[in-house]
Length: 511
Image 1: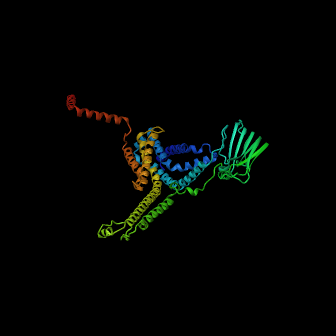
Image 2: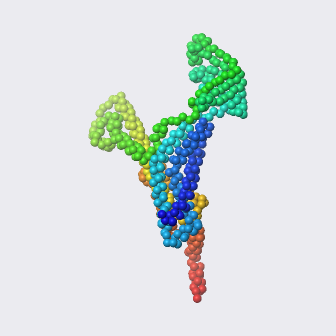
Image 3: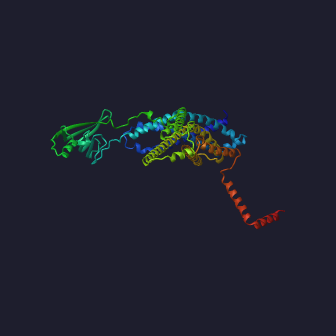
C-alpha cells in the first residue's frame, strides 16, 4: 500500500465511523418520535425497549451507510484540500483519479458488505423489531391508580382510593367493586370498603395483593335466578320468587390477590409477520414474486371458463380465452321475431338483468383481485431490486462526495453536511416517487428501483470531471466575474453607440 493510500484512508475512517453513528442515531430518534405513544405508560422493561432499539439500529444500517459514505468522503477530501495536501499531491504529478482510487476500493468492499447486510441481517432485524413493536403496542398500560378516580384496567375490578400516601404503597379510603363474570346480567355483585390498605406485588410481579384494614365486604348472592329471568317473570305478570340474599362481612385484615397475567409484555408468533417484503431476503423475494406471478396467470386463464355460468348461449369461440364481438345477423332477427308472451318476456328480461349484474360483479371482483396480485408482485420485485440498488448507491454517493470535497476544499461538519443532506434528500425523493409509480403500475420495476442511482450517477460523473480539471465550481469570484461580463454585454447590446465610443477611446490610448 502506498503512502498516499494510507494518508487518504487514515483521513477517511475517523469521519466515517463518526458520521455512521450520528446517522444511525438520527434514524433511531425518528423511530422514537414516531412510536413514542406506544411506549408511554406501558408495563415494558428497559431491557425490552433497548432490545427494540438495537433491532431498529441494525435495520437502519443499509439506509444510513450511503449517507455516511457521502458525508465521510466529502469531509476526507475537503480536509485534504483545506490544508493544501491535495495541492501538494497534484503538484507531484498524481491525478485526481489516482487520489480517489483507495476510496473506491474501500467503497466496493463496503457496498458488498451492505448488500450482504441488507439481504441477511436487515430482514431478520426487521422481523424481530416489528414483532416486538407489535407486542409492545398490545401490552396494557402500567397500573396507575389516581386519587378519587376509578381504575378499571384490572379485568373484573374497579378500584378507587381517596388518598395515596407518599410511600406509594399505603392508601386511605379504598373502594373495590368486583364484577361478576356475567356482569352484563347482574352488574356489580361484591363491594369491598376499607379504611386503609396496602398494595404490592408478589412472585416476580405475577400477582397483585391488596391488604385491606378495618372494612366491610358486601355481597349479593343469587340462588338460581338471573336478572334476565326476573325480567321474564315481570313481563308475563307472574310473581317471581325472592332468591336474592345480601351478605355483609366485617374484617380487620383482608387480603385480595389478583393475577396480573393480562399485564406485561407477551410475545407473539414471529411467523405471522413474515409475509411482508421487509422481512424477506433475495431468495425469498424471488420465490414470492414467482408465486404471485403464477397465481396471476392461473387467474387470467380461468376467467373465460368461470364466466360461462353467466351466459345461456355458448359463443363459438372455445379456442380463445377472450370474448369476440358477435355481429348481428339474420339469426338475431329471427330470434327477435319469435312471438313471446308478456309473462315470458318479463321472465327473460329479469333473467338477462340478473345475468348482467352477475357478470358485472364477477368482472369487478376479478379486476380488483388481479390488480392486487400485480401490486403484490411488483412490491416483492421492487424490494429485491432495492437491495441491489442500495448497495450500488454507496459507490455512486462516494463518486459524488470525493470530487465535491476536492472542489469545495472545506472539511468539518459545516458545508459538507449541507451538501450531503441536499443529495440525500434528492435520492430519498426519487426513491419514494419511483416506488409510488411502480406500485401504481405507471413505471417498470427496474426503472423505479434504479431511478435515483441513474440521476445521481450523472452528478457523480460531472463532479469527477470538474475535479480532474481543477474546476473552481464553488468559488465566489467566478460567479462575480460571470455576472459582470453578462452585465457588460447586456449594456453594449442596449447601447451600441457607447460600445463604439469605448472602442474608439481604446484605440486612441494605443501608442
